[in-house]
Image (cartoon, rainbow, N blue to C red; front, top):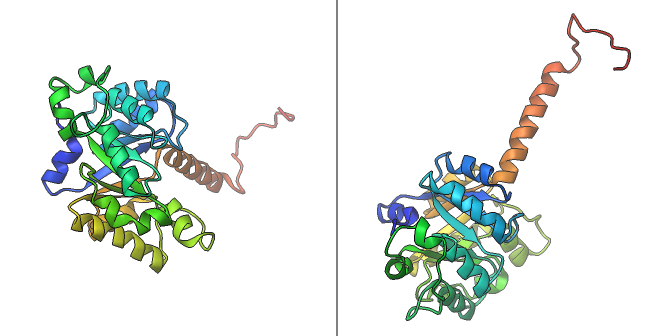
Length: 271
């Protein structure tokens, strides 16, 4: 089985830069995969991506060698097992609030006797190389999202779950969960109490021998998070990158032509 690039970087003591895909398009997935990310996650929770759309995206990314992962819509065995059968090397599951839910998640990711995953890796048999049945449990990453007050309260119990590789922090929902409407939801938290909460999750994960991942809005904040000790950082997503580049281009154009007119401008009579 082709080795998991994320786990290889972790074994070398290196952080992982993760990309994020919310647009259901194989070409945009191929473009993102060619930009130098260590891994790329297809977002099937909040992204505009269904299962039929995710398959060609995974296929398009394969040639780049980037490690493909999927954020599944929910803690559902069908969604999780189908994402893995499609060739995902990692699963990020939202809204894991208790150890019981974390144990369910692990059971859906691992084959017996480590879990209850059903065997039928239709695409994964071809996309991951030989030996899938014997090696998948060791290569596939299982991450539980910590993003509610309940999950924060149960953090140590969740982290004690055997077979769970680590936790993934969703700062927007975590802010809503811990602070309500006091602050607007979003990434790159600057509030001292939120930074304390994020760093507590990081410390707790490492104390439990688990990995810690954080979703970020900017490269600058992600680099700071790596400085804190995060093992995986996601920077923005395809939607925000496209919107940001388009906005910057339009803004630059408006700045350049504002208050000016070409000397050879032709009066086209309204046309």
